[in-house]
Length: 144
Image (cartoon, rainbow, N blue to C red; front, side, top):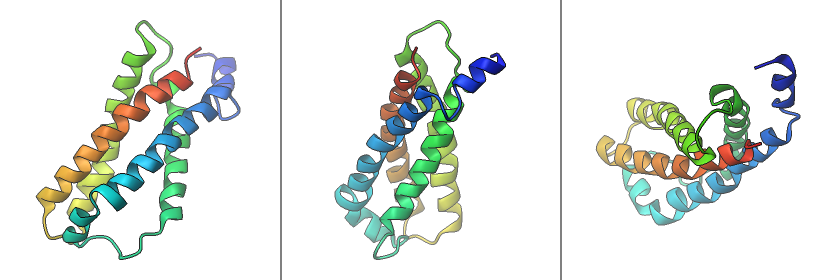
Protein backbone atom coordinates (compact mmCIF):
# COMPACT_ATOMS: atom_id res chain seq x y z
CA UNK A 1 0.00 0.00 0.00
CA UNK A 2 1.41 3.40 -0.95
CA UNK A 3 1.25 6.51 1.23
CA UNK A 4 -1.38 7.98 -1.10
CA UNK A 5 -3.49 4.83 -0.85
CA UNK A 6 -3.20 4.84 2.93
CA UNK A 7 -4.24 8.50 3.09
CA UNK A 8 -7.18 7.89 0.76
CA UNK A 9 -8.30 4.94 2.90
CA UNK A 10 -7.91 6.80 6.19
CA UNK A 11 -10.59 8.38 8.31
CA UNK A 12 -11.27 11.04 5.69
CA UNK A 13 -12.12 8.45 3.03
CA UNK A 14 -15.64 7.54 1.98
CA UNK A 15 -14.98 3.84 2.66
CA UNK A 16 -14.07 4.56 6.27
CA UNK A 17 -17.35 6.34 7.02
CA UNK A 18 -19.43 3.79 5.14
CA UNK A 19 -17.58 1.01 7.00
CA UNK A 20 -18.26 2.70 10.33
CA UNK A 21 -21.96 2.91 9.46
CA UNK A 22 -21.87 -0.70 8.21
CA UNK A 23 -20.75 -1.75 11.67
CA UNK A 24 -22.86 0.47 13.92
CA UNK A 25 -26.18 0.55 12.08
CA UNK A 26 -26.77 -3.22 12.17
CA UNK A 27 -24.81 -3.92 15.40
CA UNK A 28 -26.81 -1.60 17.61
CA UNK A 29 -30.27 -3.04 16.86
CA UNK A 30 -28.96 -6.63 16.81
CA UNK A 31 -27.30 -6.14 20.21
CA UNK A 32 -30.24 -4.27 21.68
CA UNK A 33 -32.79 -6.88 20.64
CA UNK A 34 -30.52 -9.80 21.53
CA UNK A 35 -29.49 -8.61 24.99
CA UNK A 36 -32.44 -6.50 26.13
CA UNK A 37 -35.44 -8.14 24.46
CA UNK A 38 -35.10 -11.65 23.01
CA UNK A 39 -32.72 -13.09 25.60
CA UNK A 40 -33.29 -10.61 28.45
CA UNK A 41 -34.68 -13.32 30.77
CA UNK A 42 -31.61 -15.50 30.16
CA UNK A 43 -29.23 -12.61 30.89
CA UNK A 44 -31.28 -11.68 33.98
CA UNK A 45 -30.93 -15.26 35.21
CA UNK A 46 -27.15 -15.03 34.78
CA UNK A 47 -27.11 -12.11 37.27
CA UNK A 48 -24.17 -10.34 35.63
CA UNK A 49 -25.73 -7.11 34.33
CA UNK A 50 -26.94 -4.08 36.21
CA UNK A 51 -30.74 -3.71 36.39
CA UNK A 52 -30.67 -0.63 34.15
CA UNK A 53 -27.99 -0.91 31.46
CA UNK A 54 -26.46 2.33 30.21
CA UNK A 55 -27.43 2.19 26.53
CA UNK A 56 -25.43 5.30 25.49
CA UNK A 57 -22.23 3.59 26.72
CA UNK A 58 -23.01 0.64 24.47
CA UNK A 59 -23.51 2.96 21.51
CA UNK A 60 -20.25 4.83 22.22
CA UNK A 61 -18.47 1.49 22.50
CA UNK A 62 -19.86 0.46 19.10
CA UNK A 63 -18.80 3.75 17.52
CA UNK A 64 -15.24 3.20 18.72
CA UNK A 65 -15.25 -0.43 17.57
CA UNK A 66 -16.74 0.52 14.21
CA UNK A 67 -14.10 3.21 13.65
CA UNK A 68 -11.27 0.80 14.44
CA UNK A 69 -12.73 -2.09 12.44
CA UNK A 70 -13.44 0.11 9.42
CA UNK A 71 -9.98 1.68 9.57
CA UNK A 72 -8.32 -1.75 9.72
CA UNK A 73 -10.27 -3.42 6.92
CA UNK A 74 -8.32 -2.05 3.91
CA UNK A 75 -5.05 -2.65 5.75
CA UNK A 76 -5.80 -6.22 6.81
CA UNK A 77 -7.76 -7.21 3.70
CA UNK A 78 -6.44 -5.07 0.84
CA UNK A 79 -8.18 -5.39 -2.51
CA UNK A 80 -7.28 -8.80 -3.83
CA UNK A 81 -8.74 -11.64 -5.82
CA UNK A 82 -12.11 -12.92 -4.72
CA UNK A 83 -15.45 -11.36 -4.10
CA UNK A 84 -16.16 -8.69 -1.52
CA UNK A 85 -18.52 -11.19 0.12
CA UNK A 86 -15.78 -13.78 0.57
CA UNK A 87 -13.36 -11.14 1.93
CA UNK A 88 -16.13 -9.78 4.17
CA UNK A 89 -16.93 -13.17 5.64
CA UNK A 90 -13.22 -13.79 6.25
CA UNK A 91 -12.88 -10.38 7.90
CA UNK A 92 -16.02 -11.03 9.95
CA UNK A 93 -14.52 -14.33 11.14
CA UNK A 94 -11.29 -12.58 12.08
CA UNK A 95 -13.17 -9.86 13.98
CA UNK A 96 -15.48 -12.39 15.64
CA UNK A 97 -12.55 -14.28 17.14
CA UNK A 98 -10.97 -11.04 18.34
CA UNK A 99 -14.23 -9.72 19.76
CA UNK A 100 -15.12 -13.07 21.33
CA UNK A 101 -11.82 -13.06 23.20
CA UNK A 102 -12.64 -9.84 25.06
CA UNK A 103 -16.44 -9.78 25.13
CA UNK A 104 -17.00 -13.42 26.04
CA UNK A 105 -13.92 -15.12 27.42
CA UNK A 106 -12.59 -12.17 29.43
CA UNK A 107 -16.03 -11.34 30.84
CA UNK A 108 -16.64 -14.98 31.77
CA UNK A 109 -13.25 -15.09 33.47
CA UNK A 110 -13.79 -11.95 35.58
CA UNK A 111 -17.46 -11.51 36.36
CA UNK A 112 -19.61 -13.50 38.74
CA UNK A 113 -22.51 -15.24 37.03
CA UNK A 114 -24.80 -18.13 37.72
CA UNK A 115 -23.67 -20.14 34.66
CA UNK A 116 -20.45 -19.58 32.74
CA UNK A 117 -21.56 -22.15 30.16
CA UNK A 118 -24.87 -20.41 29.47
CA UNK A 119 -23.13 -17.04 29.18
CA UNK A 120 -20.49 -18.39 26.78
CA UNK A 121 -23.18 -20.04 24.65
CA UNK A 122 -25.32 -16.88 24.49
CA UNK A 123 -22.45 -14.51 23.78
CA UNK A 124 -20.80 -16.85 21.28
CA UNK A 125 -24.05 -17.10 19.32
CA UNK A 126 -24.47 -13.34 19.41
CA UNK A 127 -20.90 -12.79 18.22
CA UNK A 128 -21.34 -15.14 15.27
CA UNK A 129 -24.59 -13.45 14.23
CA UNK A 130 -23.16 -9.95 14.56
CA UNK A 131 -20.04 -10.62 12.51
CA UNK A 132 -21.74 -12.70 9.82
CA UNK A 133 -23.76 -9.53 9.20
CA UNK A 134 -21.18 -6.76 9.67
CA UNK A 135 -18.10 -8.40 8.12
CA UNK A 136 -19.56 -8.45 4.60
CA UNK A 137 -21.12 -5.00 5.07
CA UNK A 138 -17.74 -3.51 6.00
CA UNK A 139 -16.19 -5.18 2.95
CA UNK A 140 -18.97 -3.82 0.75
CA UNK A 141 -18.45 -0.33 2.19
CA UNK A 142 -14.76 -0.45 1.23
CA UNK A 143 -15.36 -1.95 -2.23
CA UNK A 144 -14.04 0.17 -5.05
